[in-house]
Image (tube, rainbow, N blue to C red):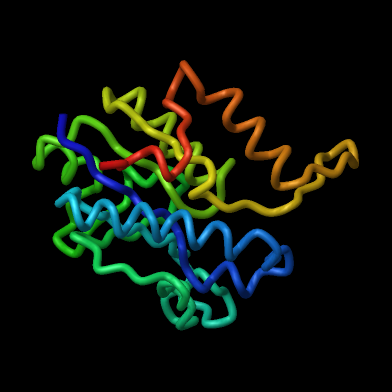
Length: 187
């Protein structure tokens, strides 16, 4: 079965947000870079997705006018194709030709996707659920996703580790296969 690696929202926009935290970032970059390098070496397409705002306000870090919708500088990537989205699921992202990522995957006979990127519980999880429902097999290397501490409406604080654990709980066996990045494209 043909695979593709999807690299979601690994962009400078997040560094501009007040919740940005560098603590787990180096480990995340190491794991996602491992996936990108292995995919490239094995001829697996690497598809890069950027989250953009419909706003053209340069003060919005997700606006193209901000200059922050660009790959985080520590990541080395030469994507097979690039897509932009304004919603959480990357399958709706569009390439320069206007075709969606979903169309690209189907047109290239991709049956299984590997989901990586920022944020674990938002765009990465949403993309995984959508892709599974659309008939794709999904691999979710949680250590190649990044998230940040959050607070629930009740006031409870959740650590990134707790958020990742919850994502693994709800995806495993239902929407995705949970693996470590080192085990995904192992030769």
